[in-house]
Length: 425
Ligand SMILES: Nc1ncnc2c1ncn2[C@@H]1O[C@H](COP(=O)(O)OP(=O)(O)O)[C@@H](O)[C@H]1O
Ligand SMILES: [Mg+2]
Figure: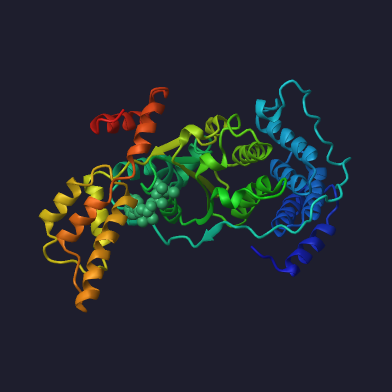
């Protein structure tokens, strides 16, 4: 996101014209801090966040921006302090366990008025945000083939309530937090997240681990903060964290400072969400067992939806979707499709896409040989099926091991049923 210099100037002038203690200037200063942070000017971002806190020391958004700005400016100690205050405010007075270092004294709450903006240690030029914030409505759930169960569950847990203002009002607190899609690779989790964003008419802010993990100190948690700042500036928005296990992996497992800081910043953002602020948080993972437990607590990613390999109707719909726009021979009739559907148990959506592509390549090769369009035949599809094994088996075996330790739950029961039906584990 690039912001015109004149916007900064206009906002600077407006901020300068307000009395420093005037609390009505807080949203303006927070907004300005966010813009500076996005533009890579950590020192100015911190200066405005600090000014906002001077007028309103308990403003959680200001604290969140102050933490990210301090971190960006290289003052990790100050950032930690802001995060601790933020966490303490949200938990009603006592800082949660993750804000404290075991054995060390309670982190000293910074006195925002007393701490002057530190000199930036880092080069304040931050590379532009790498995430993809694409147009809404490009894909919707109608583009997702089959998956009736998943769609129903998504309607129940997210879309229905979100699209109904009365329900949102009444269940606001329960709707806080994010929704995590999980399941084997290639089953359409990323695709569904994009479709959900389309359903909500929201701008899609998608980040992969590569977008988040930066190469210098403090950059990764800054990236998280900026992702949320940008989404809040253009609501409604969906923040989508793809491969959450790699973004917010268990702090115990990947015990690096960087991974810990990223999870902490993510907790700050999730805990600071309001049900009505127009930002929805979605995540997807193939490895839910590697996601940090703190991220799974109530109010965070506590709603989960399992995305399994497509069932028979979904496979048929997916195959037909793939046939569209390709020359298909008349011998690919209903009976041929039925037989293909039966032969592709446990194929993921991505496997089916690969299968039809492989069949098309055979037809294309033949077409080039004869110099005429030779459509995709039943024989092409069968040959491709022989060469394309389903990719989900390894995942399902791992999941069976995980289930041995997992408790009860809608998703787990569904997975248990699936494994039993397919005699896995
Ligand atoms: N139910 C589905 N409907 C339509 N396309 C699908 C479906 N499931 C998977 N796909 C296709 O498979 C590809 C891989 O899906 P993806 O969303 O990347 O899987 P995941 O994120 O679960 O690994 C998508 O780009 C999409 O083309
Ligand atoms: Mg994916």
